[in-house]
Length: 170
Ligand code: FEO
Image 1: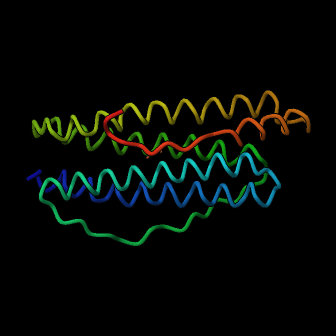
Image 2: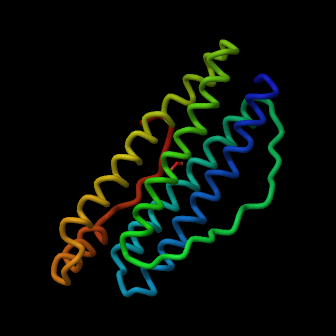
C-alpha cells in the first residue's frame, strides 16, 4: 500500500491527465474548424497519449491495492485568436503537468517510496519530451506559419504523426 497522501495525489493526477486529453481534443476541434486537419490530427494523438497516462496511473493505483475515485473533469475554456495560441497554451499546460508530477515525486522521495519513484521516472522523462515537442512546434510555427505555403507544409508534417500506445516499459 502507498502512503495515503501519495495515493491521493496519484488519484488526482488521473483527473489531470484526462483533462489534458480533453484540452487537446478541444485544440483539435479548433484546428478542424480552421481547416488545419494536420494540426487537428496531431492534437488528437496528443489526447490519446494523455488518456494512456491516465490509464497507466489508474492501473498503478489498483495494482498497489488502492481504490480509484473520479471527480468531474473541467471544461476546456480557452478562446484562440491565432493559430499560435493553442500551441502556446499547450506548452504552458505541459509545464503545469510537469510541476504536478514533480510534486508527487517529491512526496514519494520524502516517504522513501522507491516503487512510486520508479513508476514516476517514466512520467518525468515523458514530461521532458512533451515540453520539448510543444516548444519545437511553437518555433516551427513562428518560423513558417505566417505565410500560407509554410503553414500548408507544417500542416502536412503534423498530419504524419503516428500514435503508439504509451507503456511504462519504454
Ligand atoms: Fe500526460 Fe502531457 O502530460
